[in-house]
Structures are given as structure tokens and as C-alpha cells.
Amino acid sequence: MMDLGRLRALHAVAVHGSIGGAAGALGFTPSAISQQIAKLERETRTVLLERQGRGVVLTDAARQLAETAQELLLLVEQAEVTLEERRGQAVGRLLIAAFATGARGLLPGVLADLRESCPELDARLLESDPYPAAELVARGEVDLALVQDWPTVPLPVQPGLARLDLGPDPVDLLLPADDPLAALDQVPVARLCGRRWISVPPGNICHDWLVRTMREAGEEPDVVHQVGEFETQIALIGAGLGLGLVPRLGRGVLPAGVVARPVSPEPSRRVFALWRSQASRRPAITAALTAMRRRWSTLPG
Image 1 (cartoon, rainbow, N blue to C red):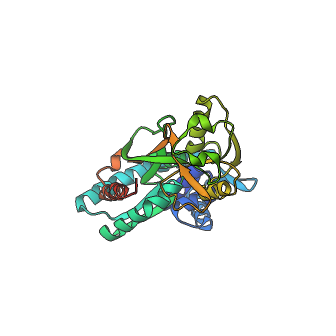
Image 2: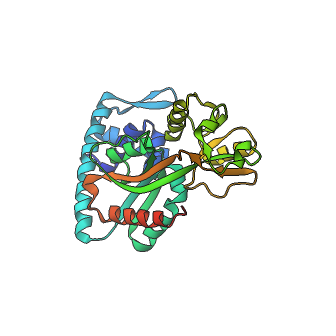
Image 3: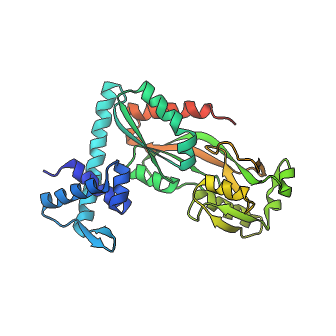
């Protein structure tokens, strides 16, 4: 009989596309994942991974086995949900994916609450952008995801997922304190034309929103610096290298020389949680959602 842990490792490689990605998602070292796959190959007498450059690719047999593994993992989850519900306690492991500023601005309090209220629950955090996080939940790789989108750039949500809306996360214009726009109490979008921008790379929801908004104002935005971390964006803004639109959640205190001004019309992200509908009865999911809702209500406006 094939070992479920080894099947889980193979499934993770199929989902994440690499041994390193699978290791990060499952909380193991790449060496441990490689060993699990090697044992599964011996167990099945089948080649599952082939070297391609510096990485690996799944063989046809491995892809078929990974699909079967996903079905088995969903069945195991159903059984775990039923048992946990009968016990009425949040136990076992709960893997939560969250976008960077949500992981920094909301999840520390949530995880602390869960450690206090559910001592038998092993809650773990995986930082992930919203697009892949939603897919990870749908595939059963994570139990719960904290994600965000914009009303004009909605996040695709796969069938079979449930959703809890937490609320809006306002986004401010960040600019050097000596910039002429800093004298305004509120900056109209039309005044942002002709400016140089610091933004996250394409393919990120925040970048998509900036491009769409400026195009509606009649201009293709000049994104001169593409930076994934908001802290780095703020440092570049402080050096006078451009403007940025930065959400408030997880932003922290701004350094001297950088100011925040609201934009009109005000941009605002929607923050919400996703989980598989079939796991809704799981006490761990209920406890985590309760903690998220409670911590969100204490955030400054």
C-alpha cells in the first residue's frame, strides 16, 4: 500500500512545480521531499521525476498519480473534519496562507489568539500572493487563505470555496514630504498623470489596479521601479524616486520625509478569507475565522 505522506509530497511537487516549492508549503526540507519521492518510486517501481536543467519535471505516470493523490487527500480531509467535529475541539494542523501585508498586519494577532484558545491546534503560516493562495486552497494544499482584491480587479475564486468578507483596506498615495501634492488634503487621480511610479511587478493585483486606474484617467502609468516589498517601495519614495500607492494594512509607521495622502476617488482593497466549503464544519476553521474577524475589528481605521 502506498504511503499517504509520500503521495502528499508528490502532489505538492505537482502543485508547486518544484521540490523546493513543495518543501516550503509542507514545512520540510527539499532533501526530505526528495527522499519521500525516491521511496515512492521504489514503492511503485515507477520513475516519477526526471531532471530538466536545474529542476525536475513529473513524468506522465507521476501526473496521473498526483491526480489520484489529490482525490485521496480530499477524502482524508473529509474524514478529519468529521472526527474533529465529533470531538468539538480544534486539533491537528491548520495551514494558513496570507498575502504579505495581511501576514504582517493581521495574522500575528490571529495566530496568538489561536495558540491561547486552541492549545491542541498547530496553526502555521505560509506567505503567498492572492492568486496562488486561492489555488492552494482549492487544491487542498492549505486549509485557509487570507486574500485581497479590488472591486475593479476581482480575484478569481474557484467553485467549492467558501468566503468570509472582513472589510476594506484603504490605500493611500505615498510621496516625499516636499512634493507639491503633499500640500493637498486629498489628491485627485487626475493630478497623478505624468508622474513616475514605484509599484509591485505585473501580475500582482495592486499593479493591475494602478494600471487600470491610470488608463481610465487617460494615461499609461510610467512604472520606473518594480518592487515586491512595500518597505522597499517606501524607501524609494523617501529618496524622491517616485510615487506609490500603498495599503494601510501592515504598513507601519512611515519614515521621516514620506507622507500619506488619500486619493479621490479613494482606492480600497477588499480583504477576505477563503476555505473549502466541505471543511466549513471543522472547528479549527471556525476558530480561525472567529479570530480573524475579532482582530480585524480592532485594526485602526
